[in-house]
Structure formats: structure tokens, C-alpha cells
Image (cartoon, rainbow, N blue to C red):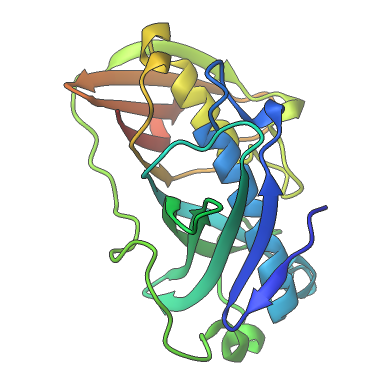
Length: 246
């Protein structure tokens, strides 16, 4: 586990990008960035007192609901980068957390904002334990990696079928459902192989419904110029939606 350091309200990790997180061009995969972001978010929340252990004591857990990632420059195998994260408090039903990934010159290569909810681990319904409310407010004014929270996506009609994915053991995380980064992998696997020769500039993703072991997710896609839309559906209802701009 990479150690997490703190600068004021921000937490950061220094990371050397390993080969297994990169694609055929030796560039960091979007799903790999999501893995890195999820880990530092978990560690930062743990240090602030509202991590996995604190929530589990109340039979609740964090679940990622929306994510917006902007790629400003390439991140390559063996690059040494610094990944920052910070908690931004509550907005409506969502707890906001931002991320920025800097290269060795201090230039931002990736910035992202995320919206999280709490679920009851037993009922799988939304939860907001009052005992943690004082901890969940930011202690000071914080900056924005991306100014607007991750948006609710509106998917185009008449998307074409793009196969299906049966949720496997390798998709699951400790909450017992498919991990958020797995949806990004499924979405990118829906695209024509030639799209992988173009860098992704921006990703928007909404998580609507958890998927569990053995469930079959029907995948749909649509291209609109340099933008691809991918949606996964379970029993006819959307479980995730992705918009990717190349």
C-alpha cells in the first residue's frame, strides 16, 4: 500500500505508474485512474474518521454515484506522479470529493470530481448516519479540481446493442457488488478497437444500480462525432451510463 501524506485539507500519494495500469500505448487507462482515485479516497476518509471502519460500525458504506474525469495530458508507464484528493462536504444528497494528478513539473495531467452516497449495507437503500454528520463537513474553504459537480447524464435514444457482460467474481469488491472501475472497463471494451488509438479527453459516468455476481448486464452504445455513449442495463433498466469524449 502506498503511504498517504497530508497537506492541510488535501491528502496525496506519490506514485510510479506500473505497467499493468497502462494500455497498449503504455498510457494510464481511465479505469486505472479510477482504481487509484478510489484507493486514495478510502485512505483519506479513513484518516478523517469517516472511512470504511467508521461507516461499517453503522452498517453503512460509501458508494460512488457520479464521476467526471478530464485528461489534460498523457500519463505514461514509469511516470512519477502525485495524486491529490480532498473532501468538499455535502451538496444535496451527494458527498463531494475532488482529485488532481500532477506530473513532476507540477502540471495537472488529470483532474476529477466525484459524488458519493451512503447505503445501508443490509437494505441497500440510501443512508445518512447522523453520528457522522459533524465529520462530513469540510473544515475550511476548499478549491475545485472541476468547478461543477459531476452531472446527471442524459443518454441518446436508439442506442445499438453492444453485447453483454455477466458479472464475475473478478468484478466484485468488498461491498459485494461490481466495483465502479469495472464499469469503465466494460464500457471501453464496447468500442471499436481503432478507438483505442485515440486518447480519451473526458469521461462522465453515472452509477444507477448495483450489479451482483451472476447478473447479465446488457450493453448498448452510440457514437456522435468524437463522443461515445455506453449504457449498461439490467432487466431493461439502466445500471450505469458513460459518456466518453476522444
